[in-house]
Amino acid sequence: MRRVLLTLILCAQSASMSAASGLAVFHTASFGGSRSVSLSLAEGAVSRDPAFDFDVVITLSEFDGGGAVLYRDGGRHKASVRCVSPATVRINSTDYPIDVSARPGTDWKHDLWAALCNAPVS
Image (cartoon, rainbow, N blue to C red):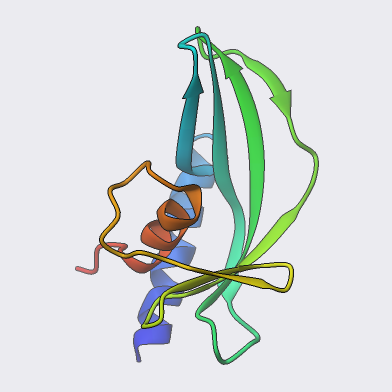
């Protein structure tokens, strides 16, 4: 049941973000105030691997201080996310443990996990 709810949330999030402007930004890092890099969810689905909850595709964009796009990475960076303990983000074949108590913005992998696993349910 939890997987069904999470899938519905992810689909609703993706649909609303696509309608709004495109991608769902889950992490932004600023560099010297004049540039920032945003990581976004481009795609997401229930994971094919039963040890994980989601398989996602991440994109990267760089912006200047005024919000103009300086660079948009054309790559499709895949990751898998496990919501339950032990919370994990897998990139390629490497598993990264997630400190679920970390503050938002501290680590992009935590922010990816939080965007998918802490989505509000109503």
